[in-house]
Image (spheres, rainbow, N blue to C red):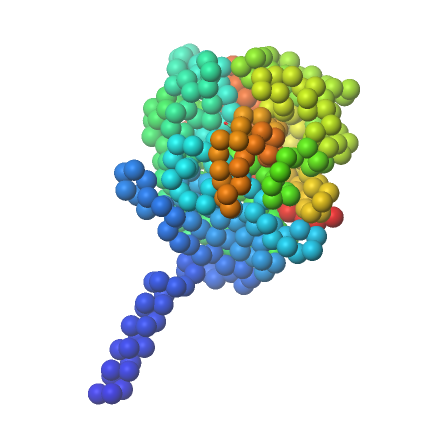
Length: 379
Ligand code: BGC
């Protein structure tokens, strides 16, 4: 009898431990690092939002929530090993519902702008909701950043997590049922990989990206962040930030980041309203080749570096021009103009309306597949 009682207690304790305290039990426990999760908030329609944290053996961690498949925190070491949160975000869930300018979010079905929200596909004209001046931005009024994603364990020997959802035919005006997944993984070389996959049952357009706002110093303006962009050309824009269609050399312009250049050096010469960088750069590797380093960032004070590699043809470099000091984020940080650098690997903005830009059409039977690696280091 005492033995049976003790046995029951042990089993009960073990179950309780597994349910309440253990890291999320993914298929194979990673040999190094972990995936843990905790509740983060509730949506207005009462879905529980959870925050999943991938951590590696160096203490680096990336926290992602299932609302918007959104990166909420990235803790990366500086040259002395000190960890700081190097992305803008909020400590609690509620500001993500209405205030967040896409902080860390997965943006889609079409990241970036589509002129007047209109495009033609297969002889039919589609009209998307307008949510940015006269244009459609980042998938519309309720894009992928404002949806709950399903969480799936991933068979991986490094910490990894996959989010998936079915974007129904007609959602935000886009044709075709789109089954889409985004997988995040973190290895012991401090490399965060984001891989996207999608299939459709009708021809559609697709352009997915991650919208993390980086600040490698952990705060302050990014004027002293030193940027290299492997792009000889960029796509100039009109007053509403729609590409004119021209592919223009950067040499001798404020958009020339071919050599390492502090972001603040020529920022004021870019013009625009508000002034600053908010442009798509055409990566040198060519439209259709595989993998290349797109961008390198060095923050001299902390020594932190970020290298962005991708198979995408373009990268939108946005210098946080619209941040205006009205948002208070994680740790009480007030976010001011130019406090962040956003490096969105993607197809070019408004591609469906420019025949000279690489195509963003996805047809049934094909799989949209793309990856980007954000490698954190020190100098
Ligand atoms: C766009 C900016 C926009 C920002 C936040 C960026 O991708 O290029 O113009 O303000 O997203 O919405």
